[in-house]
Image (cartoon, rainbow over all chains, first blue to last red; front, side, top):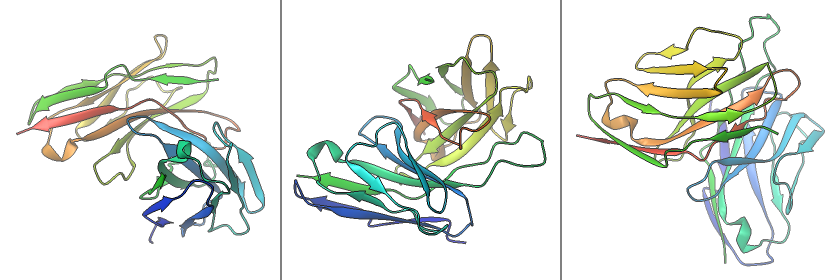
Amino acid sequence: NAGVTQTPKFRILKIGQSMTLQCTQDMNHNYMYWYRQDPGMGLKLIYYSVGAGITDKGEVPNGYNVSRSTTEDFPLRLELAAPSQTSVYFCASSSLPSLSGDGRPETQYFGPGTRLLVL
Amino acid sequence: AQTVTQSQPEMSVQEAETVTLSCTYDTSENNYYLFWYKQPPSRQMILVIRQEAYKQQNATENRFSVNFQKAAKSFSLKISDSQLGDTAMYFCAFRTGGTSYGKLTFGQGTILTVHP
């Protein structure tokens, strides 16, 4: 299993340009997430999805859009890049909570990140 | 809304010694989970240890253990026999139980440097 893969690894954008950050997981996970990490800070949730066709906003969704047409893919779209979107972007996935009742929380598996610089 | 606070921006420790990283959180929930993630220079996020709030016993994973104080809303990470490979940024994270869809709230992180 490759786990969670992200492309590109690094990108420079000009203000106003658009781009799509790709995320793919091969673990058949229902839940997928996009986080951003600003320098020296923790991760903040941008959007998440609980299955194909179902997405919802996280803590910092403004300036971004997502779609989930398949279980494997969860792309993040930046329509009009702004300097405030300079950050490292992480995609993550997890399975449904255990149905066995043992209370074990599902583990989130993270991709390697995409570093985005908007100039 | 939940908040997670890590009050130590940076910590350092000598190889083979023990270090403790602090984390406090605020929530009105009773059912939740706590995590410590490690982020080495490669930027990959790696799960170190997790704790279920309903469990009184502190979680342990090899050299890593936690001190979970539910009443104080404190969740510290102890690293024993520190190794050079432990050098990384460490994040404390929180998620509620029930239908939270696994959404995590992260602290600001603590940079840990292990010196030879």
